[in-house]
Length: 478
Ligand SMILES: [Zn+2]
Image 1 (cartoon, rainbow, N blue to C red):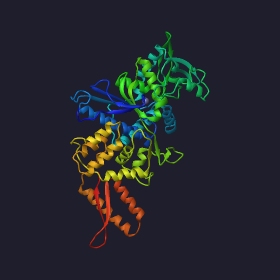
Image 2 (cartoon, helix red, strand yellow):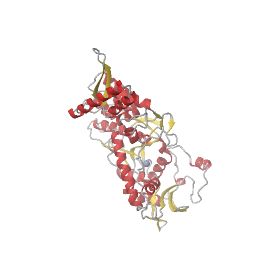
Image 3 (cartoon, protein in one colour):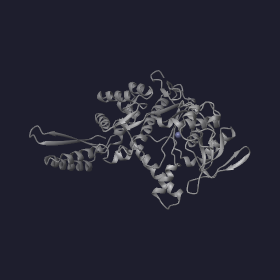
Image 4 (cartoon, protein in one colour):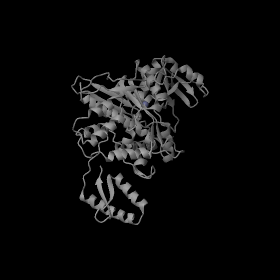
C-alpha cells in the first residue's frame, strides 16, 4: 500500500535490519517464550510481554491494511505464547509451599495460582492475550514425537547420566550449531570450565528428556533407538517444549520468534537445533527478535540488592518510590526506551511517563486513522521512542489521529464515568486532606494525593484568588 510504510525488523540471526515478509502472505505467525509459572512475574519479565504486544498490535494493523495480501486486508496474525508449567523450580516451590501434599496436586496449585496472577498482571499492563497460550504439560506427546524424530535422524542418543537415563541432543551432529549466538562448538569445548560430563558425547549436548524419581513429575515415554525400545519414565528438558508448541500451532518454519536477550543462548539456540534437525528444515523461524536487559535504578535486579520488584508489587504496594504505580505508567515507561536497548527502570522514569500520560486526552475511541509518523516509527524496527514523541505531539495539537495512534501502542487513556457516589467520596477525602495540610501534615496529605492518583483521580492544589484560602480541585485522569 502506497501510504503504509514497509515493516523492517532487526533479526538476531543475521544481525541486520531487513524488510519483513511473511512466509505465507495470508498468515503471519509469531511465537514468544512465555513465563515459567512458579512465582510472581518481575518487572524484567514484563518487558518482552509489552514489547511483543506492541509488535502483535502492529502486525495486526498492517495485516488489516493489506500490506501482505495486495490490499485485501485478510491476512491472519497468530501469536503463540507458551506457559512453562513443568520445571524443577516449580517442583521446588510446590514442595516448599505445600509440604505433605501429593506432588502433582501441589504443582497444579502452584502453576494455576501463578498463571492467574500472570494474566492479571499483564492485562493491567495493557497487553492483549495471545491467540494461543499452550501449556507445556498439554504437549508432552508432541515433545516425545520430536525427540523420537531426532533419535531416528541421528541427532539424539540415550545415555546414563548421574541422575538416571537421559535422551540428549547431539550438538556434534548439526553442522551449523551455534548460528544464532555465533558460538562455535569448538570454542565451547575449549572454553568449558566445567568438567565434561562423562556420558555426553560433547559438553554442549543438552537434555531432551530425563528420568524422574518418584518425588518428581513424570510421564511414561517409550523411545526406540536402533530398533530397540527404551522406556524412560521422565520429564522434558528445558528447550524441547518450545519446539513442540511452536511446531504444533505455527508449523515447522514460521515467521517471528521472540524473547529476551538472555534466551539467545542456550534456550533459543537449542530450540533451533531441535526443530531444524527434527524437521530437516533450513530454519525454525525466519526472524529472531530479542529485547534488551532491564536494570532497576542503575543496577542488575536481584533480591540481594534489594531492587527486585514484581509487577504486582509495583502496582499494589508502596515499595518502589514510596507509592503505587498504575499499569499504564509502567507500560509507557517501558516503551520510552527502544526494545533492543538496555533499560534502566527508575522512579524518575516512571514519573516522567506519568507526567506525559497526564497531558494526554482521555476517553477517545480509537476510530480515526493512525498517524503516519507514529506508524512509520513503529514500522522502523519498533522505534517506540520516536512513536511516543510523535504521539505526544498529536496530543498537544488535539489531533483526531491521537486515539487510534495511542491504541496501536496500547497506551490509550481510558474514559472513566464519574458517578455521584464517587464524587461525594472524593470530595470528603479532599476536605480531609485540606485539614491535614492546615496542620502541616504534608507526608500524610501527599500520601492521600498519591493514593487517589493510583485510582485515576488527580488533585490540583491552588489558592482562591479572592480569599487567599487554599483550595483543591480534582479530575478523573482515567
Ligand atoms: Zn522458548
